[in-house]
Image (cartoon, rainbow, N blue to C red; front, side, top):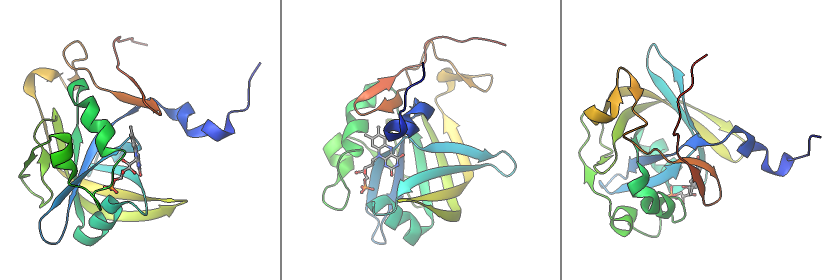
Length: 180
Ligand SMILES: Cc1cc2nc3c(=O)[nH]c(=O)nc-3n(C[C@H](O)[C@H](O)[C@H](O)COP(=O)(O)O)c2cc1C
């Protein structure tokens, strides 16, 4: 038997890799938000997309600055992930509140989150309205990560615990590799 889950439809597509998106204001103040709706969309040139609520402070800052960074947290940052996903940078400095350190990026004004294990620096390429969200497509200018956690082009899931959002306060961590 199959049940109707239309109210939770998007969670059929979870768990999703959970990232911290950093943007920066005119006067150089960085903001960090949690984002589960992210995906690669082009290999050549390298591009990713993130779907952000159009009312979020991050959406405003990305529209204004045309840049953002995507930072991949491991399980140790799960509390920070929750804080950055439940408070708005309009009212609070989330870097301070979550105990995160902004570190200058290589190519964009938005900083990276130093405590994260991987980083993508992006320049806004296009945007598309989708319901209450805006899909921001960013060209990836730089991508780098902790050497021992990413081997032969794949995450070493025996060494890194990557929280993937299931819904609400629930996250899953990939533990097993299978091959076709
Ligand atoms: C685990 C998790 C995943 C989230 N994923 C998204 C997402 O993909 N897109 C989005 O717009 N908001 C997402 N949110 C909610 C935002 O992070 C939240 O609205 C945040 O307060 C926005 O911050 P800002 O106003 O400083 O930009 C998520 C929250 C959590 C806890």
